[in-house]
Length: 269
Image (cartoon, rainbow, N blue to C red; front, side):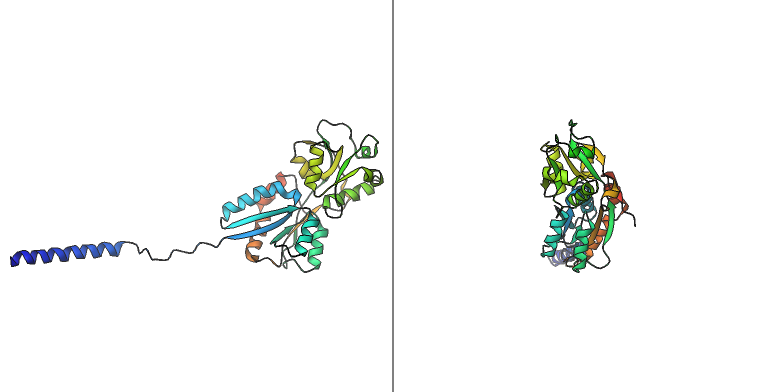
């Protein structure tokens, strides 16, 4: 009997030893895992003419930085400028004109050293597809041309450039009574696409991306101010380091390739 008890005790000791050994080799479920990067949402206020390339660029950026969500606030550059001046939350501003960026810089709203001209665009005269009413810019003065779409000059850079060009060509006085103003360049393009107007003045990139309009001619660059797109991080951003990283990405070779495919040209520095 004593021999049986001794054997039982030895067996129990062996089992206990095996059990302890297995436990020691198992990972500790309480061991802390490396912390994942906190999620961040950035707001990029950008000119409406940047809509298509930004669809691509923000999607590509998300793949590289899954913790960062970029919300794009599109609109007329002048409207976006006013929103930022009034305290609307935004981390970066990408304008279709220098005037709007100048205004923010003068008010001290840009992060130091982040402003840079990224690319340029052209101003083109467009008409609805299958329409022959307008064949030159001078045709805008003809009586048979009833409606011409323009961006609102006070808030839409494309409208400002159009007004400058038409004034330089001595056409603004004839065009103004026929003008149908859009809140941004996308609205102007839509008016022409739907044939609500006989012609319109938009950026080359918008016309190329439409598929529903014909380009009549490119306005001579000497008739208007340079169409430059400056980008900057805003000083009041709650995520300055992440905003600067996004700006750096938008300067990258990949971003430049996407922008050039959309019809933009790189800005001269």
